[in-house]
Amino acid sequence: MNEEEIEQEFEKIKQELFVKRPQYDKYPPDVVEQRRLLLFAQVHLCNIIDAKSKKDKLSEEFETKMYNIIMEAYFSWRGK
Image 1 (cartoon, rainbow, N blue to C red):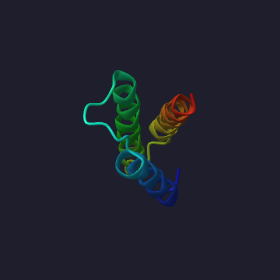
Image 2: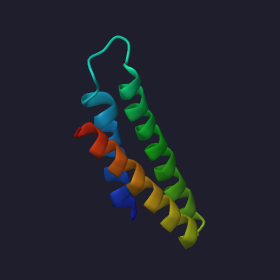
Image 3: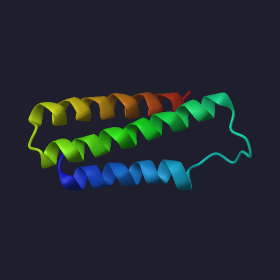
């Protein structure tokens, strides 16, 4: 991922967290699990940035794959 793609992904997560958030006072367990996936995704994006700054291609590829797996799980869960 390049810097622009990373920023776009951060924006996507921000939208999911703050704009498209559920309208509950107390989140049900499935919503909590979905939100947890978004937090994991943020961690992986930060790790991608760190790997890029260290020019560590192996870590960057790993973190990118993990990010994609997490977001795929998140969006497939929302589709159910």
